[in-house]
Length: 381
Image (cartoon, rainbow, N blue to C red; front, side, top):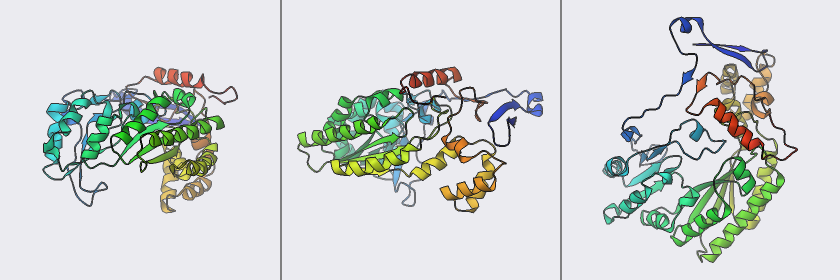
């Protein structure tokens, strides 16, 4: 449908225009995201429950779609807004009851499950003794919705742990990414999980966030030290804290799409791993090499197809992708171009002909708000 031109074989996209036949056929100049606005019962549920599935014998129910928080790195929010929720009494609870006919394991999914507008009613319903024997799992819990009541429900329903996303222990970085949390709310979430009887909490974060400095790593370490102290105050001595940390990867249609991966992230992961152990927090880093592959695919254009085909023949490792790029040198852009380079704000992006519910001007405005909080020595596109 579209003709794509490049400034050079190894340069940026220079234009994306509707192909002549598509234009004659009356196709739109831009592909706009369509959102189903009918009955929310179309939110997804499992159709197959099996011990052979990736999540064994779990009936999964999508309680919400998208996320209203608009963290500036997050495609799950920017790419899928508006936020939608299944009605608790007419859809979500009946779906749980259907699932219990085939399995005792129920998984409630969504990017921000506990921000369901009727979540308190869901918790109250699932405390009913008729759900005794059910094993309940939640995909993720927003920190400021982690109550003792929710923890008690999860324990009653055979869950031992819960997951929250904090991104960083640095308030400055949380402000940059628009993560509307403070340390007090994160500490309260841990205390509530402990007092409610849970055994563990996994906190997700990332390093290599645009604007990050070494001082921000120190903030993260101090926050986890405070979390350990909070656990001790609750006298839940066996409670386990885990920090799962990934490397920032730019995503299309987000305010951070112009930023490349920060090479310092690899070193930061090693620093965090060494020092988290001293605090008594289990550290689970996501592979830095895997993140580089993700970034190549995330910011790739049509030419990336050639790279993927060769890398697939050679094993799909980072080495395979580097080998493919070397083999295609002069025909496609470099690894630096796709993965590490910051792109100018006036770049014609490979996805410029696609539009989500968030306008390009709003995305650009959020980029500016974030960039205005960067250190003075940070390079900004």
